[in-house]
Length: 533
Image (cartoon, rainbow, N blue to C red; front, side, top):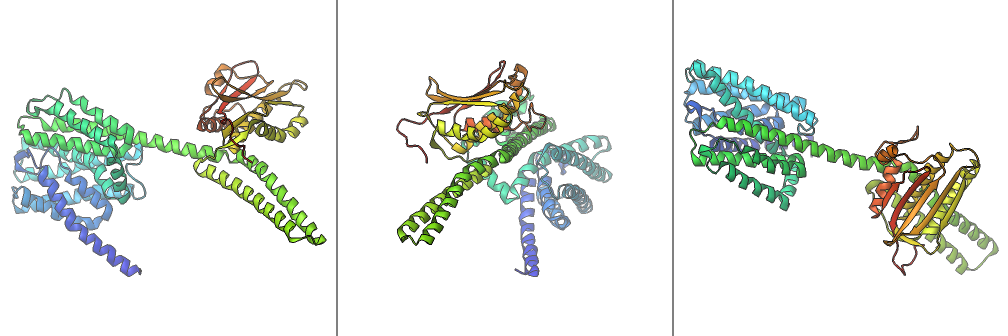
C-alpha cells in the first residue's frame, strides 16, 4: 500500500469514527443527566468527558470538531438548550477548548507510554484531571453566572457540583474507556470477563450495592466501606484491568439506584466523592499488583539469564562427550577409507556420528529452552553417575588447592530429574564449598558429597565442607536474591538452585552448624524404570 493510499485510508477511518463518537457521547450524556443544577449541564456524574479525552488522545486536535458538535448536541437534544443560543455556543466553545487542553497535555506527557502503567503515571494523570476540571469549571460556571443562569451566591456550589461531576466521571470511566479503545485492551478485558472469578466479584458487587443502597433515599452512607470488598478482590487478583471494570460497574449501579429511587434529598455529590476515593484506592492497589507481577516476571527471567554462566560449564561438559565421539568416528572413517574397508563398516561409523551429532543438538536445544522458558525434560538418572560426573570436573582445581573431595553414592540409587539442571545445582554447591574451605589451613580442606534415600521415598543429596559453616543470621537471608557472602558474588546461585529443586518437587536448605552443610531432596525414580542414556 502506497503512502498516499495509507493516508487516505487513515483519513476515511477517522471520519467514520466521528459519528460513532458523537452518538456515544450523546448516549452517555442522556443516561447520566440527572439532578441537574438549574437545569444546566451540572450533574453529579459526567462520564462523557472521559470519552472525549480518550478520543482526543487518539486523534489530537482534529478531535475538536466532533467534540464541539457532541457538546452542542447534548445541549440541544438532552437539555433543550436552557441557556439560549449564544451562551450555549460560548459554553460549548469553552468546554471544547478546556477539554482539548487537558487532552493535549495528556497526549504530550503520555505519547510514548501508557498513563496507567505505573503509580507515578497514574498520579500524574490524577493531577492533570483534577487541575483541568478545576480550570474548566471556573471558566464554565463563570460564563453561566455572567449570563445570569447561576446566582452569584451559588457560584461556589455550582463550581463544586460541576467539578465533582467531571472529576468523578473522568476518574471512574476513563481507564476502562482507554482500555476498550485498543485491540490489546479489549482482548485482555475479554479474557478477564471469561473467568468465573470475575462473575463472582461482579455478583458480590451487586449484592453489596443492594445491601448498602437498597433504600438509597434515606441512606447516610455509613456502610459504604463494604464496597471495598469487591474492589480489593478485583484489584488484588486481576490488577488494574479488573479494578477499572469493577469501579465502573459500581458507579453505574450507584447512579442507576439513585435514578430508580428518585432520591431528591440525597447528597449525591458526597456519594460521588466517596466513589472517587474508592476508585483511586482500587487503581493504586491494581497498579501495585501489576508492578509486582512484572517485577516477578523480570526476576524470573533475570535468574534464567544469570544462570548462563553456570550453564556454560554444563554445556561444555555435556557437549564434550558427543564431540569427542564424533572426532573419534571421523578418524575411524579416515582409517577405513585408507584401508579400503567395506561399505558396511563405513555406514555403521557414519550412523554413530549422526547419533552423537543428535545428542549434541539435543543438549543445545534443551539449554536454549531453559534460558527462554525454564522448560525441563525429566528422565531417569543414575545418582552415582550424575554425582561422579560433576565431581570429576572439580578434581583438578580441588587438587591444585589441596582440597580433598570424597563421594559416597550407592550405584543402585536413581532419581527422576532433568539431569542438566540438577548438575547445575550440584556444581553451584560444590563451587560454594570450594570457596568456603579455602579459608582453612592446608590439610583441613575437605568436601564430601553423599546420597541416601529418605524414609518418605526421596533421594537426599548432601554437600558438606570443612568451612566455617552457616550462621543463623546468614541462614535467614541465604536464599534471598542478591544476598551473597562472596565479595564478587551476585547472590543468585542459591536462589536459582532452590528454584530448580522446587520445580522438581523437592526442597533445598542449609543447616546451621560449625561446618557447611547443604542438602536437597529429589523424587526417586520408580522401580524398573530404564536409565537414560
